[in-house]
Structure formats: structure tokens, C-alpha cells
Amino acid sequence: MKKHVMATVAITTFLLNALNSSAVTINAKSGSREDIQSAIDNAPENATVVIPEGNFDFKGPKIEVKKNITISGSGEKKTVLKQTSALDWFFRVVSDSYFRLTNLVLDGGRNGNGIKIASDSLEMRIDNSTFKNFKKRAIETNGNIKGVIDNNQFQENSVTDIVIYGDNDGAWKRPVKLGSDDAVYVEKNQFEHKNVKGAIHSISSNRGSNYVFRYNTIDDGNLNTNPIDAHGNFFYGRGSRKYEIYGNKIKSGGSYQGMYIRGGTGVIYDNEFSGKFDYPIVLENYRSFRDTSTKYPAPDQINDLHIWDNKYEGKEVEPFMRDRGMVRQHIKKDRDYFMKKKAGYKAYPFPYEEAEDPEDEIGLMGSLFKMFSMFKKKNA
Image (cartoon, rainbow, N blue to C red):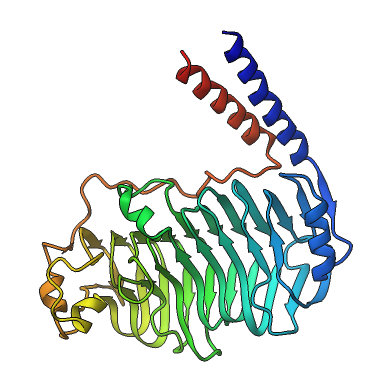
């Protein structure tokens, strides 16, 4: 009994200290790389670092974030950081519990990348920010990460706006849980690629990725090759594990395909395509046509995928498969994919609310109560 009481006191003390730390705000002296890094290094865990209003030239190296923290600008579109050199990343995040970035404008200046997040135990939120003019990608996640990327604007980024990488074999050992918080949620964002050449994806995934892409708007001119993507198992490790793609509006002046799905399982429904697409939804598996000796089922290929109520100019969308190699033998309707709603499927509540803001005392006190309750149950 005494051990249980002591442990409870320790947990309570830890979380109350976190609560006190969350009230701490550290103001960076400027938007220079050195001043932002200094503010982060000097901030306690769960604090908020605020970058002042203004337009700042940003020169490398990348900012390292190794603690649980919120990084914020000073109001909507009032804090602008612009790369002026061939920087690899603005921020590299390796914290293990919580990260948030909000109210920033990151301008790649046609160089490098935006934010790279790597963790297997992170809850994150990236919101109400603008990512533009990146040469390769704006956001990349790596590992078994949960959280939300919401209410952002992505403008004229080359190659890919958002890349979701999972934890490879780890993801394929866990059961699929559609409609759960076990994913990176990308919701209520705006994507534009009207002038930049080389835009390929608004979102792409691989290596055991789990993502939900919902209620976003994509306006691609005629430059984006295939806005919504899920890679398979051939070039970059294990294939995409699961995806839920729904409620999006996808517009193009001339694209070969709107979605290019090459592996994994999931649901695709209630999406609206407009403009010009040769094929709004394409299903494929690289290994099926690059190695015709591959037996069914191919590694990490499309399976138990449900597609329904997607419209292109008001008409129901039927997915297309190119006739090359063994693709049409390996991916068959009513065996590997189904043109109907998935029985028992229920979408996760919108908007995503699982990511707790460290400044939200109710959220932290809720965590305190939850941990205390779990401890009591375990030791009852």
C-alpha cells in the first residue's frame, strides 16, 4: 500500500510540474535561426516559444527540437521565415511526447524542406500556418506518430507537400484500426500548385504509413501529376499500411490521375473531382508489373480496400488499372477492392481533438486523472 501511495504521489508531482511548465512562454529575440534555437534550448519542457512578428531571412543549419514544446508565430501570417540558402530543413523534431507548430509562414525560397519529425511515441499538431516554395517537401513524418496537420495553406511546393512515413515492419505487425486515432490526420488544409513545375503529390506515403486525408481542398492548375498518393512495397521499404481518404475536393486543369493507390488497405469515399483528369482514381502495384514472377498476393499489395460515392463532374468514379504485367491479375474487384461502403466502418470524430495543447490546463489535468485511474486499476 505504501508503495502505491508513493508512486501515486510521484505521478501527481510529475504532471503538476508539467502543468506549471506549460504556462511558461519564452520569447525569441528575433526570427533568426540562432535566436530561435537559443529560445528552444532555454525553454523548459512543455513551454511555448514565441517568434516575434516580422519577415526574417533564415540561414542554416536546421533548428533541432529535442523536447516537448510549442513553437508559435505572433499571429496569423505575421511571422515569416524565409530560407535564403540551400538549407535541408527549417526544423528537425525528435521529441518523444508532444510537439506543436502554429501561426508561422515558412517560405522555402525554392530551396530545401520544411519540417521533419521522427519519433515512435509522439502526439503532434501543425496548424494555422503557411508552407510555400519548398523544393522537395514541406512536412515529413517518420515513425509511429499520431496527431493532426490542420488548417494550413500549402502553396507552390515542388515534388510533395506532405510525406507520411511509418515505422516499416512495426506497422505491419499491428492490426489495422480504421476510424481510430492511430494515424496522422491531414484535415481542412488548402493545397495550390498553379505555377510551380515538378509538383507531384499533395500527400504521399510509404514505409508502413498510416494517414487520414479528409476535408481538404486541392487546386492544381494542370501541374500536379497525382495529388493523393499511397506507395507500395518496391522502392522505399514496406508499403503504405492504411489510409482513409474522404470529403476532399480535388481540382485540376489537366492531370493523368487524381489518386494513385499502390498498396495497403483503407477507405476512399465522398471525394469530388473537377476539371480534367484522365483517371480520377488509379490502382496499381509496382511489383506486379516490374517482377512478373511475383505470386499473388504480392507483398503489401492493395487488399480489403473499399471505394464508394466518389464523383467526377457529378458521375460515380470507377477505379482504373493499367494493363501491364500482373497488375490486373493481382488486383481484382470484389476480391482485393470493393465498390461499396465497408461494413461496420465509422470515421473518427471531426475535427481531430486527440492532440492536447500543453497550454490547455484541462487537457493536462485530464491526463493526470487518466494516468491516476490507470494506475489504480492496474494495482487494484
